[in-house]
Each structure stands twice: as C-alpha cells, then as structure tokens.
Amino acid sequence: MARRAGRRAVAAVIVIALSALPTLQAAELPITKNSPVSDFQNRPQDVTSYDFDAPPQGLFLTITTAEGFDEELGFHRTHEIVPVKPTDRFRPDTPAVFIVFHLHQHYQGFQVFGRCFPEAVAGLDPTVVIGQDAMHIALEDESGYLTLSPPQDAWKPGRYKVEIHVGEQVNEMSLMGTMRFTVVASGE
Image (cartoon, rainbow, N blue to C red):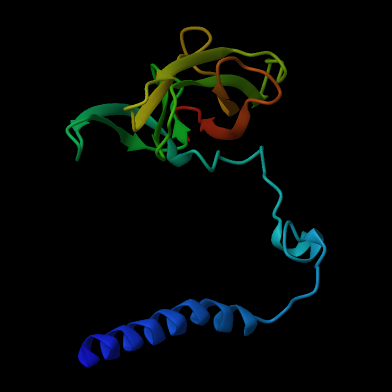
C-alpha cells in the first residue's frame, strides 16, 4: 500500500513537472518588436525585374529553337519532345523553325502560343505577325513544341522574334518571353 502511494506521488510529480514545462519554455522566448512588412518582404534589393524581351523563364525549364524535334520515351514512360539540331541560325530553305521546350511541374492544362514577327527583315513590317502556332499542354505533359513555317515559300534573310505566350488566349498579360532566330543567306 505504501508502495502504491509512493508510485502515485511520483506520477503526480511527473505530471506537474510536464505540465509546467511548456510554461517555462514559453517564458524564455524573446520578445521582438513589430517590424514593418517592408523590412523583410519584397525588399527592393532582393527584387529583380522580369525581362519579357528575353527567353521565357519560370514555367519553362528549357526552351530552344531547332531544325526539328523527336519524340522519346521519357523517364516516367511519357512522350518527351527533344530538339533535333538546336540552333538560332537557319537557311532560307528551312521548311520550318521549331521551338522545343521542357516545362516545370504544373497543376493545370494550358496552351503555349508562339507569334512570329520579322524583327529586322528587309521589306517586311516588324509589327505584323507572319506566323503563329499553339500547343495544348495537358496536365501530364512535360514538354512540347511550336512549329513556325515561312510566310511564303522560303524565309527572307534577317532577324525574327517569336513572342511566347501562356494561357488560354494571347493578350498583354500572357506574354512570358521572347525567342529570336536569324535566317542567313545561303552564301553566309
């Protein structure tokens, strides 16, 4: 009986000690002053501006112009699109310019649009779209491509830019970045 009473007393001491422990720990926490949000969030020195006139970032793991593409069986047994002969210089008789991209993980389907403009091409207005393509990206897709065909039978020598848009439609908010390629005359 004395043994039981001793055990109960020990148990009571342990319960009291454990219940007082959080109070002791909380009392030791330092009190900090109320700091304005600008001190620790979105500080100007930490923010870099996004360049919409450069290749897209963020959603795109990689993006490149190429002479073609190939489909391979990916790591997760998915169709992976890979560039064939990646380059940013093409000949006038190139049948199409491909923009091949790999994406970071995404949680919703969307479309990727490419709109081609003649940035520095003799005889062509740089504000007029000369080609465009779109690809629907499903939830399970990790890669894709856009195909840009020449405006007539062949590309005119010069520099072209391709606006890359992401979303359900092309608008000023859907622009993700810009790709560029050059068509060189046959002798160059």
